[in-house]
Image 1 (cartoon, one colour):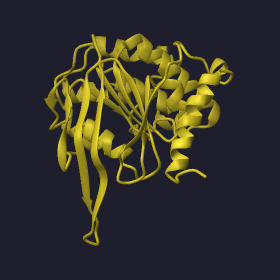
Image 2 (cartoon, rainbow, N blue to C red):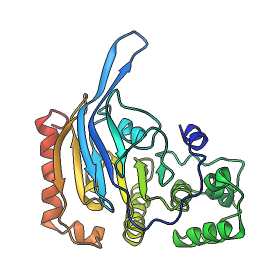
Image 3 (cartoon, helix red, strand yellow):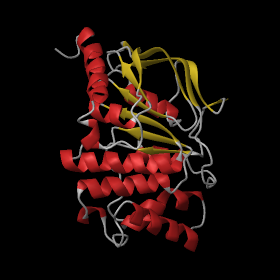
Length: 276
């Protein structure tokens, strides 16, 4: 999937984001054909708008169409019915001002950390000294100064995912798409990555569509949490998160509003038979 993303996203280098992009799913339905010839409805009449600069987390059970949503937002898939648009323009291919972070870091093992970060820009044209300086700056920003000449196998899982995030952010995306980016990390690394992401997003001001299974990280990070129903995916709950920013795990764990919001999400899943 990542190779396909790079191949079709070989577009002119975008300029730094000034404002997040507006993303809209308009009555989107997505059908898939199985090998047995059956038709599966992954998403049914799905309608969602992400405002410029908004952080929206989508949480739901496996198979509810979360990753399908992200693939369509990335321009890698198209709806069976309805449409997806960015800034009012229907999306038919990857957008030059969006970038994607996948669950697996998708780093190329034969390229150094620095070369992995620069890969999307290299596919769009000749790399300059400024590009290299930007990559080094991003490494410093995520706590990986001095690791530019290392190879992926020399890094921990959390470090590799930081490199993956740098590779996305060096493209100056007005829309950042994240598909369960912390799902494979240990608990402590996951907590630190969530805090780092919040800090980066607050400073950049881009729009984020964040796909996750984690109720806690969805509530902690998002302005709004979208709770999906089991397949076919529909919106079962749309929950605004009024917690002040910046947010800290230590404070959130002692905040009754944080726990109440998580309980509301869990109750929604329980009503659908997803949780007992």
